[in-house]
Image (cartoon, rainbow, N blue to C red; front, side):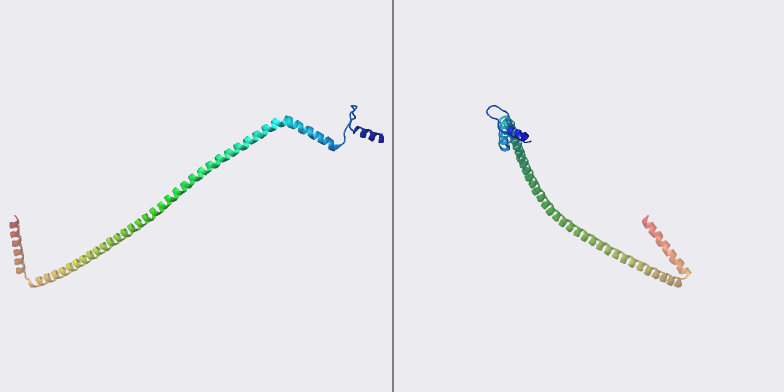
Amino acid sequence: MKNGTDSFVSLGRWPSAAGSFGFNIDILSTNLINLSVVLGVLIFFGKGVLSDLLDNRKQRILNTIRNSEELREGAFEQLEKARARLRKVETEADQFRVTGYSEIEREKFHLINSTYNTLEQLENYKNETIQFEQQRTINQVRQRVFQQALRRALGILNSCLNNELHFRTINANIDMLGSMKEITD
């Protein structure tokens, strides 16, 4: 077994100048060599690709910044327009408020005047109705008094008149009517 290990260890040494081939098991020295070879190959062959990737990334970032600036400017313009509209709406609202208050005052004044006029008309109608009812009542009383006076007069006349006086009164009235008829013809 010792021979197998020795042979592996002998393979792990650097080849001699005589051109022999072998494995180097020194991890630190082989990793540095491998790493430097890989980096050299990457830098030599990947320089263009990496440069292109970085340029593309740079362009995308610049485009994003440019778009962001344009969006910011657009948003600022919209904000200014919105503020102007807000000021305009606030001015119109104040104007509507003032107009509304004055309109309310006018309507209130008109309503008070209208109500006063209506009350005045109702008062006039009431007074006219009272006067009419008083006049009607007075007329009714007059008619009753006249009817009672007429009944008394007829009663007195009937008791005082005899048939002959009655015929003479009728004839006198007929003659008066006849003379009135001649005058009108």
